[in-house]
Structure formats: C-alpha cells, structure tokens
Image 1 (cartoon, rainbow, N blue to C red):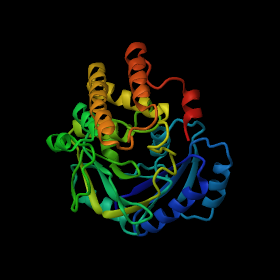
Image 2: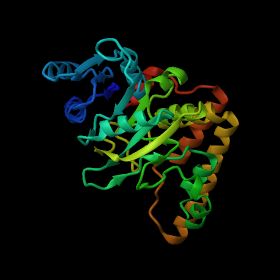
Image 3: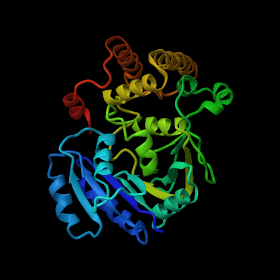
Length: 327
C-alpha cells in the first residue's frame, strides 16, 4: 500500500514563488503517490496564466482558478474538494505556503508518521527561515490566560502561566500539539470527512487553529514532527509585520475563533485579559523605557473589533472589503 498525498499551494499574486514552492514539493513527492494542486485565489494579475502555462511542463502539477478571493481556507477547500486529478480522494492532504520549500524527505516523513499512527489527524513539520534559524510552529490553543501572558510580557507572569503560552518553543522530538502552523501541515482526509473542511468565515489567520480545535474535540491527535523540515520565507505571502498596523481581517478572525470555540462571553474575557496584560506592559515600558512591542493602534482595533462583533453579530463583514484588505 502506498498512501496518496495531495499537496496544496494557495497562490495570491505570488506566482513565481508559488512555482518555486511547487518545484520543491515535486522533489519532496519523489516516491510519494499523489499530486500537487496550485489554487490561484483570483489574483487578477496574470498569476493564473503564468501558473497554468508553467504547470504544463511539470508532471503531477495542476492549476485551479478559484474564481474568488475567499481567503486561505477557501482556497484550500477548493483543492480538497477537487481531489486528485483522477477524481479520487487522497489519503492525506498536505498544505504548503507559497513561500515555503520542503526538504526532500519532508512530505514522506509526515506521511509515514501518520500512516504508522492511525489516530493522528494532523501533523506539522519543523520550519526554519532563510538564515537557518527555527520558527515557532508548534502551539497550544489560545486562551484568556495566553492573551494575558502575551500582552504582559513579564517574566514572573510568563513563569506562572508557562503552560498556557501559545508557542511551545522548539520541541527536539516528535510530540503532541494542539495545533500547527498552516505553512506546512498534513491532514488525514478521513478526519476531514468526519469534522468538515476549513470554516470559510475566516479570511486569513486562525483558520487552521479552529480546524485543529475541531479535530481535537473529535478525539484526533495532533503531532509535531521536527525531522520533517521546511524552509519558510516568513510573511511574504501575507505581508503581516508586527511593526505595522495589523489588518482588520486578523482581528475579525480572532473574534470568530473565540466566539466559535468558547462563546461570546469567552471572546469578551479574552479581550479584557489582553487589555489587562497590556496595561502591565505599558507600565513597565514607561518605567524601564523600553521600546513598545505592541503594533500601532493594536489595542484600539482589538477592542473596537471585539465590541463590533459582540454588538452587531457581524463576523468578518463584507467579502468585497475583505478581498480589498488582503495582501
């Protein structure tokens, strides 16, 4: 038996990099049954035509035009629903960012681990930057306590709440995780058949977190497999920077995640705890004359989006506005 893998790359206005990612994935698919699908999320900049023409000379690669910029989850859902080129459903679905490049054995190692462990619903690889430094990609679920710890950024608070921190650091060996970065993660197709695909209400961010939350709630295990490694050029595909104002769709996704997984009251508490933690940080910053680590307008936007969500019931707003906000 040779389990099949469908590797999915969602492109938005980054055709050349998506092609480089697909070429790296092709090398990593050597000896692995399956195919690669690149989904163009309605780039409208010639990306689809560039990808389509290049794919004609790339065995096992096909290009799909989604027809709508519905976000990361939407683009992946398009490819998952399409399945393999012969119409069959793959055994595993591997998500790969267009700015991520798997090592030659990365896809095989993830597939083999999941094949050997039937209760593993998803498995993420380790990720490193261009400089070789590791990225944090193994995580605990966000919570009110993680919001407080993140915002406060104070040693004694972090020590007390260390078990609630979202980043798990850099585990040296394969271990259980709550969720993994969507830059490089493999899902079991039978699990997706059971729990459903990505919630397309999310435009960008938190969609893989919520999908993994559903997986864990259904009894599936999530694993981090560091021997499978991927090189990632961070933020190229999204443009997010902690020195710039965070786009509205991030706050909307956060609000939807907390409300969906814990209810409106939990969303309100999560925001309140972040503000409390930020108050501690702001006091430390004034006393110790530290450079501010909270992005511009972050607290105002956080409270504003939370309030809007709780009072109006709106989640992510008008799709046209979301598409215009997206990088």
